[in-house]
Image (cartoon, rainbow, N blue to C red; front, top):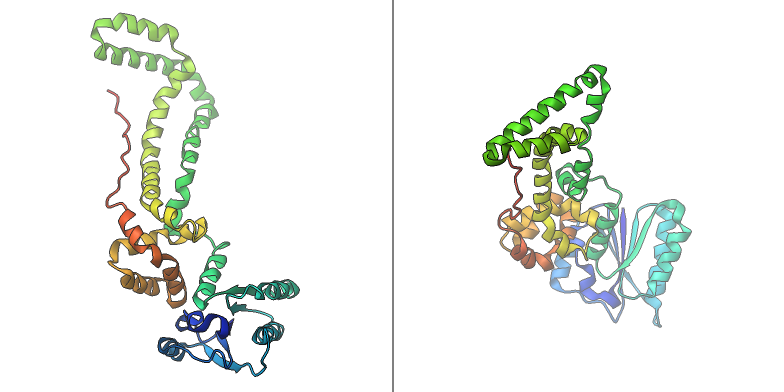
Length: 322
């Protein structure tokens, strides 16, 4: 359950932005006074349509910080009464932060979440980001998580080596394999360089390292097998890189990884912010979708422009040897 304590003197109607996305398990306390008791018509409509429980509390005492003290009093009382949930003061007054930090420390055994935010939607966005810090990565973003670890695929190449050294019979056949590899090199060199066939063949026989002669034919098929996977991972990272660049200052890398593919699909298919808003709410639910839209809407046009039209990653294919 989430509790929102609205400092209406400080945030006015803007502080209630996002109230329509709350669920029936949420509670909103709206503190008002003679100096702040007016709400805009759209805000009243959103309050009316919100499924959250609402309670208006009038501050009857006049004096400096009178409303602030009443908010903090109920804030601590609700934590002690419920001993679980999330508690947010909606205000731009930094004076609340010391009280909230104290409650978070004093009631740490309850496992609660506390914070001070300028709007309801900003509190929901922060909650979404914090809840995803320890969340497991989704399967659909496994390629993104693997993209920075592309070098690991190269380290796995020596895997077939134990198979050769594991059986004594194969160890006895090594000299024959060496001879065959030398013969192959002679034939290939004769086909390519007919004018210098004898000289090239003598250099290969005399200077060739036996260890490298065995490894040469083995590395080629491995590179051919791992190349498509590495190429696909690199292309995925290139395609979604613009999202990490634009949203890197707004969300953590882990949070972006969880949503990068969905954001890319939304940017590709939506023509404006309204369509983006609808897409997020349909795919992630009202609360999470509303919060994600709030984070990304300011950069929608930029993402639309910087999104690669086609896969621009051109990778060199392994050459086939004759």
